[in-house]
Image (cartoon, rainbow, N blue to C red; front, side, top):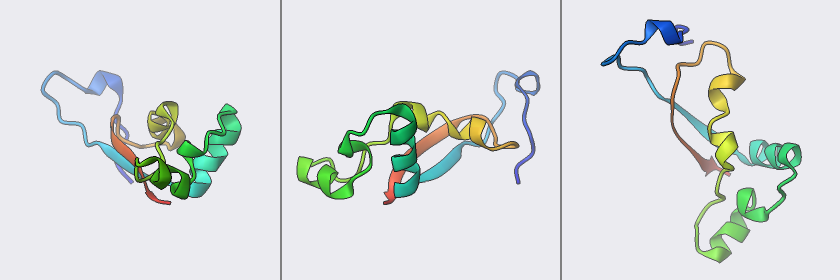
Length: 85
């Protein structure tokens, strides 16, 4: 697990490792239930492919959630893609 980083420990020029997280179908469907947004574009791969976007588009708020979801995660999220759906 990565070392916990606190706001006061980061200075101008500091490098903070980014977090990459793969969104699973389960995670996307659970978030749809929590948010009430059941647009299949956010969780159904076939639907996304038929629209021409390739893979489901992850909800914007879910992209920013991982740092708050796990203790000890470095600040910053590089990208969250639905690569494991």
